[in-house]
Image (cartoon, rainbow over all chains, first blue to last red; front, side):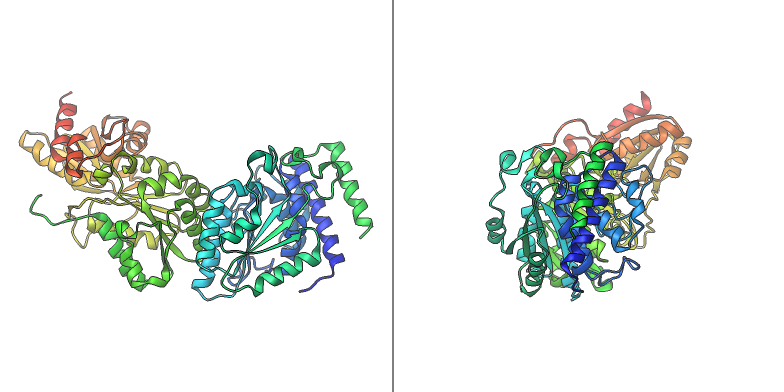
Length: 277
Length: 313
């Protein structure tokens, strides 16, 4: 289903509000990397994936694994607005008894395809799902979103090696390349770059895009579907904290929630963006 | 038991997988470059389209297994116990245990009977590691017959299972028609004076020990505790209440394995005198399996010596 970019932008803005609402009420969580991935996750849930919120276990659905599981607030906000649950529930994020666990849990929330949180593991699980699709000759696709800091985990390269060796062209990996991790700039902490040529060397078809440009996002996912016998990496250049003035390009907001005052600033920022859409 | 046929439990694992592959199309098998050693090669030969060698990357293999299970497959993931349980512990904990996915881990070359490879490959802590994961079933078969029963039970059980197999050929003493149920131990021999709760290759040795001690007037009850988690509390309590003395015997560290599991049950439900036979808090070393079994006192004589001292003490 092709949507107008304007509609996608409006939804993504609502998803960003959901991220801020969730982390504010949780008094914890990871807004920075959730905001950077909000456009990609919105695109996946609202245009790209064959899914049904009323039938979350539909056998032939497309699968999404949030390998950077700490971006759970973005996943939850997208799922809520897509109709998996009432967006009001976003306020229960990380609360005792909530279905919205700090990191996604498939046993708690229907529609979550894989429990993640320990970096590097979700990618491998997505590879397993893509392999299952090949074994069964199904045409569903599998998507997984990685962080750039996550690419310091060795398991990323184990998964990449296997996905390529088994020619899993039903797998699209998206890299949320916001250049920051909790300890600072990715390249200052422990440099995994260049990631495009690394993945190419592992046998991936690599597409580099602006991860906030819906035309580019749409074109990249379309291109990935035409690639045969190779998995695709969409390297999405993004801005950490995108949409919230004081969070943008700041490692400080990787894993910290806004208090009352900054919550209002963030919501006002997003309201203002909304008015332009 | 020297006249009895000897088969390694890993052989039974591989052969059973190859048999079950024909019965159940959902079974897929993963290995980490050890298919000849773990015997998953038997399955690979029969079902090459459902066998995936992940290469030397055990953590990745466990998470791929999780993804396959989340897509309706029944994956068996195999490597040596050291790497399956140790290297990939956190992957098993977070990607298999936490979401309670239907992954079966077939860990071969467990314990000191790996032999010549030495301490780096002699996994004596896998039961301890796997026992700490909520919802993980752990089975440690005592011979080839029971190993086959374990694999069949694992397929019919929905949820994560860790199965422990050995490299070393051990006597086959269970009957081919043995009844097997996850979570149920077996009384191998009834006795009044002392209970020997054994697991894996120590079951046959415990029976040998009971024979030795019978000559000396010590009447041993021998239990085969194949399922270490969930453990058969009822059987342990019934036996301990009869004998009042319990010895555990395992080819594993005495920290965290069967000995600990039995102590946890009895200390809360029926405190009795206990002693734990196994690998004390140390690493193994190179040697033949037979030499190492004697060195660590896991043969019939070694167990009999410890039980004798314990009963008289």
